[in-house]
Structure formats: C-alpha cells, structure tokens
Image 1 (cartoon, rainbow, N blue to C red):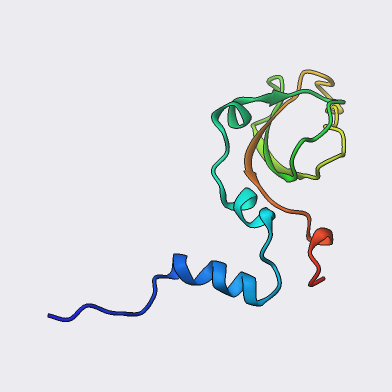
Image 2: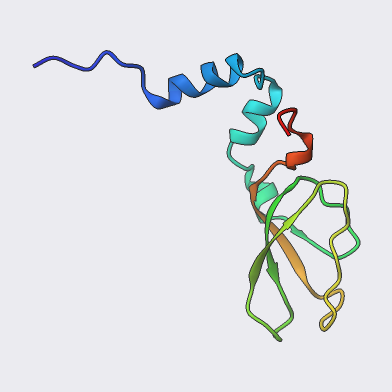
Amino acid sequence: MTSCSAPKRQQIRPVLDFLNGCWCSRYNLLRSPLSKSMAEQAYKPSQAVPISGVYRVEHNGHREAHEATLLQGESFPACNICGGEVRFTLKHRAPDIRGDKGF
C-alpha cells in the first residue's frame, strides 16, 4: 500500500497566503482559538468592541438571543427595548474587509 505524498491542506494554506502577500502576524491571530476568558467575557453597551467578529447578543427577556457582526473600535450598542441590559459575547473573530489590501 502506498501513501499519498501530497501535502495536507493545513500545510498548503500558509504557503498560499505567503505567495499572495497576506502572510503576517495577523495570520496566527485570526486562526488561533479564542482564549477562554475572551470567549466567556460578556460586554455591555457603550464598552469598546475589542475585536472585530461575530458576537452572540442576549437581551433581557424580550427576544431570543441572536448573532451580530461588530467592528473593533466601535461601541457595543444599547438595545432600543432593554437598553443597557443587553450583553455581547464573542463567538468568533471576523476581520474587517476594509483592512484587507486586496479590496
């Protein structure tokens, strides 16, 4: 039985990023798992969004939890109904496309 000598997909991706001019420290930051404290941190309205990404939004009983994309440097918004009781938890990072040299 012979084994395939082709590189695995995980090994090819960093090389492709390097060839496309995308290799930087951002590569590891965006692909690294969230730290436990960051994933568990609940943010309140008016706090600064620390990382661009998809956040779970939990209201104070008037609607089901949902997800929203927020950008780093913006402020977490208050809800029109439950105001400052809404909480945001980072689900996963999602970089702002405006920071990508290709766009």
